[in-house]
Image (spheres, rainbow, N blue to C red):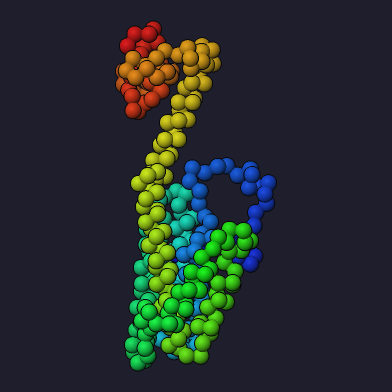
Length: 278
């Protein structure tokens, strides 16, 4: 499940010229910023820890090694790709975040299988070591927006006592705890994206609204150029009373002719002829 990577400046940071950023046109929906997501930070630790675990404790010729590394990578990369795709498609972002969640579930099963097949104990939820690992995650859930590189090694180093342990059971159990934490974060992320889509609509809805607003602005400008009238002197809509805008018929037998149309269109479809009759 290979996904394209997104590269920033050397060292992983996203550095841009401030003047270049100021000249950049505004987007209807912002994208990127995934490096500041707690889910991305957590899955970065999981990915690195999985690679290290496979190198230390598993047969490099095993097909499972490649599957585990790819699942860990997919959990991380799909968060990044979904964040980048958010500017154009809310549905794509949701789909990719769900792919990341599914990849982590696959990885979780692989670590549970390793413990079971090697006769090693799996920590219970209330095990002191599991609680200690979870506490590290809670302790590092702070606002890291002021950091120049939010994905630095600070969080990863906090897990070193478990992830660098000589006992494979300790390492595997610690990664299982991290996966559960990442899954919790992704579940909240999906719920937030769904709520945002319901309340604000997706990219296509925002694009349509922006297009209507731009068309109305152009119609008012055209009217001002032709007649010098302001909104206060524009005719009122016979249906809702809002100021009307000069429009041009784009289809039908009157194609090309101009008429007054309600500025509240499409909610209100009131019209008048240029001579003032309805």
